[in-house]
Length: 190
Image 1 (tube, rainbow, N blue to C red):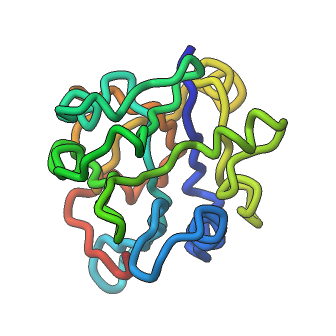
Image 2: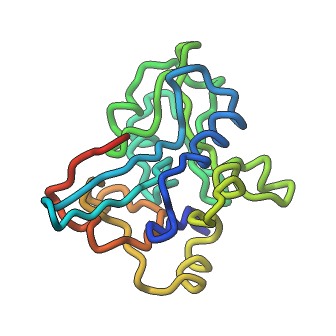
């Protein structure tokens, strides 16, 4: 089974409700966020386009963070969620350097942390905090095959702001705006 996120770029306004909900649910300190929402622009006046992207752990099929961890503290649960066992973590930072998406981070307590797909909320029948908080329903979460059936085959796993999906095989499906394929993007707010 592979679980993951669906992100509809055509619905996202960059409001950051997902980012705030994640930060609140995880009680993260100032400067630490597990979901980053940002806005990017492409083109030149008078033909300018913009898009927002909400990024978190992709719960990859081949997670580079897990492969790099010398303590074996990062593992894939039976449901497909990639999680950190904070008891095993020594905070050496191997996972932070290995992840091409820059997702795991060393927290103030010296150990690594990242999105765990709110697995405890999901086990109780809910959705991840970011999904539940999105006012425009730009996010969804579930079995990747089911998400593909639900949202169609037009979803992509790569856009210009992201690294190649070839190595880690991320489980995030993106309904992308045309502008997101332009490699000449400018970060407006990340």
